[in-house]
Amino acid sequence: MARDNRDRAPRERGEDSELVEKLVSINRVAKVVKGGRRFGFAALVIVGDGKGRVGTGAGKAKEVPEAIRKATEQAKRNMIRVPLREGRTLHHDLHGRFGAGIVVLRGAPAGTGVIAGGPMRAVFEALGVQDVVAKSIGSSNPHNMVKATFAALHQMASPRAVAARRNKRVTDILPKRDGEAEAA
Image 1 (cartoon, rainbow, N blue to C red):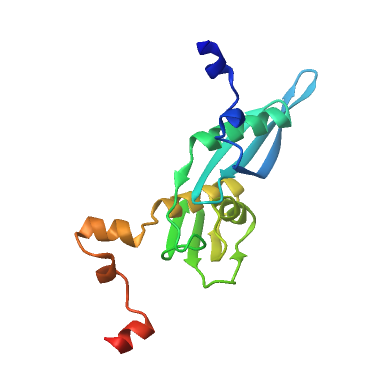
Image 2 (image 1 turned 30 degrees about the vertical axis):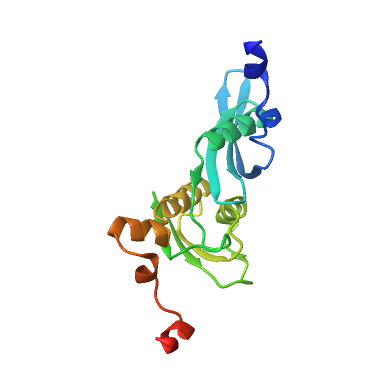
């Protein structure tokens, strides 16, 4: 009886069904041997739930589907939670760096959409961000761009977390809006 619970696939338990998988890149590498060339494949995959959780993974194998499967499993293990403002954009501007890859991420008003280049766009779509402006500076290598984006997202702090860390109220941390400033 205990075996039934272990053998059940993650989809049957309801964990994986809502995850979005985005294939960012596949790289074919060749090793020259006596009989010719041996090919291998490396895949970079982004996995997210569209509600503030996202992960990245890289996998290598002799066949493409196996490389994608390995990368997807690693991405599911490496998922992080990112606090989003109103569930659609970033709370504040971020800078991320990994190797020669540098990214600048900025929250945007509603209706802007995702303005970001290839690999960063996949991260934001899997994360569930609807309005963001992002710029890649430096390396255009997909691995470095994705890792720099994750380095930036790790720095994201919600006003509630900042207020708790400073022992203040959320209203003390956030700047006053135009309507509130006139009333005060």
